[in-house]
Amino acid sequence: MAQKITISPVTRIEGHAKITIHLNDEGKVEDSFFHVEQFRGFEKFSEGRMFYEMPQITPRTCGICPVSHHLASTKACDEIASTTPTPTAHKLRELMHMGQTVQSHGMHFFELAGPDFIMGFDADPAIRNIVGVIGVNPELAIKAVKLRAFGQEIIRKLGERRVHPIFGIPGGVTRPLLAEDREWILNEVDNHIQTTQVGLGIFKDWAAQNQGIMDTFAVFPSMYMGLVQEDGALELYHGKIRMVDEKGALLEEFDPHNYLDYIGEHVQPFSYLKAPFYKKIGWPNGIYRVGPLGRLNAASHISTPIAQSEMRIWKTLNGGNPVEGTLYFHYARLIETIYALERIKELMDDSDILGTDLANPAGIISGEGVGCLEAPRGTLFHHYWTDDLGVIQRANMIVATGHNAWSMNHSVNMVAKQYVDGNQLTEGMLNRVEAAIRAHDPCLSCSTHATGQMPIYIELQSSAGEVLDTLRRD
Image 1: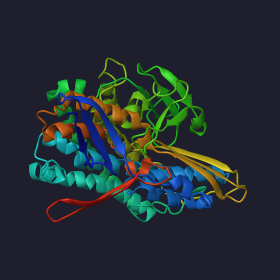
Image 2: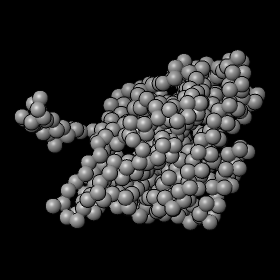
Image 3: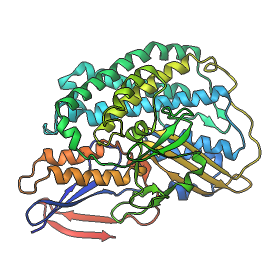
Image 4: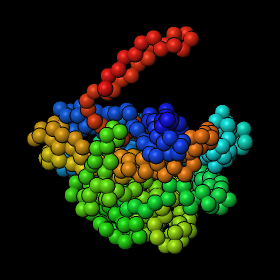
C-alpha cells in the first residue's frame, strides 16, 4: 500500500517545519512537501502601535536575524518621519548589518550545514553536528565559534546587546562607535577572513570530490533577485533591486519602494509560508530565488578584492549562466561572508565612522514608509502605513525566507525522488532531503505572518505507548 514518510522536525535550521514524502505502491516517491507549521501575527498586531515602536517590535519576529528586521524597520520609519540618517548613522547601521551577516552566515555554514560536508551525509546523526566538528577538528570549531562571536560583538558594541539591539531611530542611531571598539574590530577582522577562507576550502574540496552530486542535487533553472549597487555590484544594505532570468538577462531593476508593482504572493494549502512570484509572469512560472545564490547570480561583480576573486570563479561555474545547483548556496554564502568582513574593514577606515553627528530631526508624518535590505537569507521588505499621528494602520512584511518558498518545496521533491527508496530506507537518504532545506538556510520564525487558528493534534499515551485519547483541531 502507498505510504507516507514524515520528517519532523527538520533539523539544523531556524524554526519548525516538517517534510512529508509520499510513496506509491512500489515504494517510489510520487510527491513531497515542505510544511511550515508555525506562524507569526506581526503584521496584524502591529496595527495601532506608533510607527517609531516598530524597530523594537518587529525584531522579536526572530532571535537569529533581529538586526535585519530592526534596520529594515528603521529605514521604513525614516520615511514616515520624513528624515534621512546622517552620513555617520548610515555607515554605523551598515556596520551593524555586516556584523549580522557575518554571525548568521558563519553559524549556518560551520555549525548547521557544514557537518554534512565535514562528516558526510551518511554519518551517524550523533556526530553530524557541531559536537562532531569539535571531535574531528577542534581548532576549526573554536575559530568558527569565534567568527560568529565577532559578528555578535559588533552588534553588541553598537546596540548594547547581541540580540534585539537598541540602535536605529528615525533619522539616525542612538550611540557612536568608540575609538577603542574600532581598534578591536580592526585587530580581529583579518583572522576571521582567514577562518572563512578555510570554510571555502572545505566546501570547494568537497564539491570537487563530489561533482556528480553538485551537478544533480536540486539543480533547476529559475529567476534570481537581489540588491545591487549603481554599477551592478553586490549590495547588502542599500541599493536597487535587480531581477535576472534563468540565462542571466536583465528582467527588472527597480526602486525597492515599488516592490508591490513586481512581487505578488501565492498561498499554498500545505504551508503557512506564502510564496512570492514575479507578477509580470505570474504563478508558478514567475518564481525566483533570493539569498546568497540569488544575489550572486543577480550581481555583476563584488566591490571588495578577496570576495571578487571568488566571484570570478562563481561566474564561470555554469558557462557564464546563473548557477542553478542548490548546494551552491553554501559557496555563495561563504563568498558573502568574506565580502561582509572586507566591508567592515572599509567602514573602519571611513572618516565618518567615529563621527558624533548621529541623527537628523524628524519632519512631518508622511503616512507611509518602505524599508528594504538584504537579510542573510534574502531580500527583506518592511512596509508601514500610518495615520496623520503616526499610528500604524497597516503593515506588510515580505521576509527573506518567503521568497524561496517554492524553491525549497521543489528542491525537497527533486532530492526525495533522486535519493529516497521506500523499500530500502536509510537515515542518510532522509538527511539528504533535509539538506535541500538547509542549503537555503530558512528562518521560519520570521517568515510566516498569517493570522487565524493553528491546527492542533494531541495524543494522550499510556506508559506503554498505547494511545488512550486524541484531541484534534483543524
